[in-house]
Length: 458
Ligand code: GDP
Ligand code: ZN
Image (tube, rainbow, N blue to C red; front, side, top):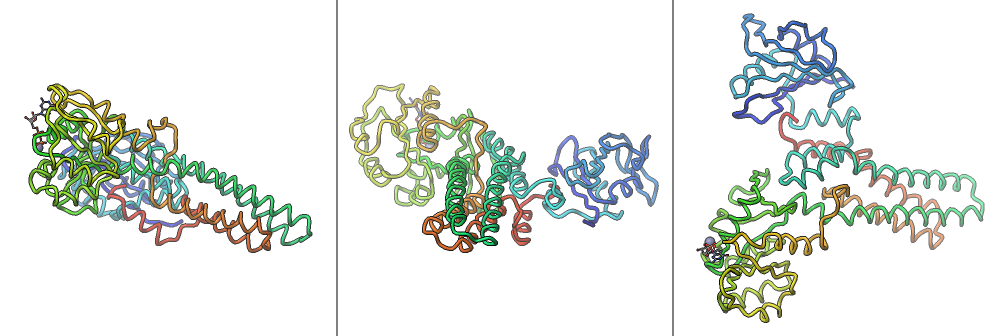
């Protein structure tokens, strides 16, 4: 595949101690050699070596920047093309100067995701791995990061490919049967289709079972803290944010006035949300009344309903309880360091024991119980061990479901001894749908759309 040579700043632009510019393409070595002066000329350097030197302005001969150049020759690079990575001093000015010189050569600026796209087009990674790279960049918790990393490493592809293989073998068998139709072969083929479809459906089910958890780990549990004034909502928020290193990210696509703050309780990422700023909106109930808080409450996957255990229940609280029963709720009985006044029996009319967590935010007690309560609501007790492949991408989940439906159709058709060539269509469809996950049969428009989500320099 013929392609031109591209460059982009690979590190975040801003104040940093170093910045890296990545150059990739057939002309990378030749073009960077023109403007790099070091002990060894770059075009004579071995692959996977690092060279100290200077970027020179070829027009004036002036030294522009002191750099380290790392050379990785095709195909042993991320893009499978010749790649040079130039580490320069951090700061916008230094990097821009080097970029300017590079772009005066036969090098153009890369589009967002273009390096990863080349890695995909050159067969270095498949589509699900590329999508894992996006997730990796965006991941908001250690756990989400490790889910994404597994995908980048190709774990999902390694599970999809054997399923495709099974289907291809089945298709080959059907093909033979169409060419040599004999009655006994036909019923044998119908059985084979049923067995193989069932086998693949079971595997798809296993993958789909992780989907809900995967999605939660990837996106966080959208959580709203609700309760009357003074029960300790702000204190809880602060405690969660402090103890659990809040990772604040700006996610493309969210409206400007929606603020989302990410905290993790042990391994569980919570996306605390609301509209006008966390501090105010978590107190939404006290500020604007129960009525107006409904928007935030409706959008949440999880409600943390905070009560002061040292006071009797208030009628507002009983009303709120009725509104939210049936939702995923954890009732936080706060201030257990004070003498208890609250009648639990009323709570137990709406919630079960597992949903009720006693805490003293002031004394830093009960966060572990909160975590336990959340895992039992969302993960059926505990998070799976780390080696589970979580299917977290909505696109993948959709395709797995479609493939399963196609196989279900094939199974039923085979069961009813419908002509084999009709069944073949469903099996082939399932094969294609699985292929679309890893990009074998993904249309160009989809590929463009996926790579357009990347940031510059990736
Ligand atoms: P909010 O109005 O629901 O946000 O409540 P705040 O977080 O502002 O807390 C109200 C008051 O309760 C503050 O004075 C907190 O210090 C206090 N408070 C919060 N949690 C506890 C707790 O666990 N025990 C005790 N004794 N006081 C607490
Ligand atoms: Zn408050």
